[in-house]
Image (tube, rainbow, N blue to C red):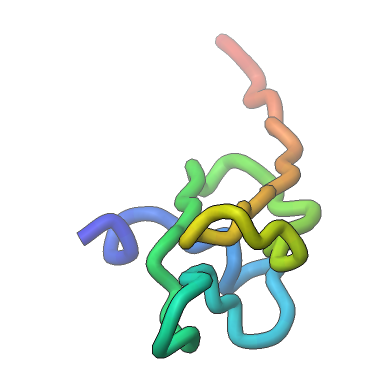
Length: 70
């Protein structure tokens, strides 16, 4: 439902397949970041070298664009 309304950060700035589940079958993206369309997506990274969780950490870097106020 969120994907219909807000941009998906991985799809805008991620690389690779974006798998975030650290168990079998291992090819599933179960974590997502969605953002306000007024934000600029700068970078998206999946931290897949941390092995103590069943989810890999995902990190998004955004620029908040100030809109002119009237």
